[in-house]
Image (tube, rainbow, N blue to C red; front, side):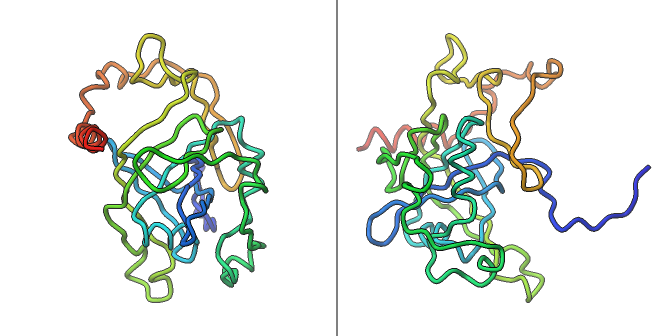
Length: 225
C-alpha cells in the first residue's frame, strides 16, 4: 500500500563524485557531490551556487570528475562537511560545514596534474574523467526564493583514466561491472553495489553503438598537444 509522503530529500541513490578544480592561486580544491548523470561522454552535475567548486568551474571552465570506489569511503567522509569558501555561507554553516583550506591533508587523498585540463586527478580514485564546462543553468528558475541557489552544469568529457583492475579482461576500453564497485549515496548514507541480480536484456546491445562524436573530438584535442 502506498501513502502520500513529503520527504525533505529525494536522493534515491547516485554515485559519489569528487570534483577536482583549481583555485585562483593555482592550488587544487576537491569536493564531494552525489548529484550527477551521464549520457555518452556528457555529464550533468547538480551543485550549490555558493560552493568553491562552482566558483572555480565558472572561472576556469575545467574540472576532473573523480569517482571513488567503496574503498575510498573514509576519505570521502572526512570531506563531507568541509568547504573551500571563506566565510562559510550561512546555508552551509547551519548544516555544520567548516572552512578547510587544505582538504588534501584532511582526506589523505593524493592530487596529481591532469593531461588536458588545469584540475586535479585523484590517484586513489579508480575512475578519473577530465572535462570542460559547456553550459551552466540555474535550477528552479520558476521560484524566486530558490533562483540562483543551485546550478546544473553540463560537462563534456575529454579524457578518461581507468585503473587496470576494473577493466574487462581483453577489452581495454570496457569497464567490467563485476569489478567496478562505485561508492553510492542514498538518503545521506553510503552504500556499495551488491552482486548482479540477473543478466540484462539491454546488455545485448553492443557498447560501441552508444559512441558519440565527442569521443573522437576528445582524441583530436590530445593529438594537437
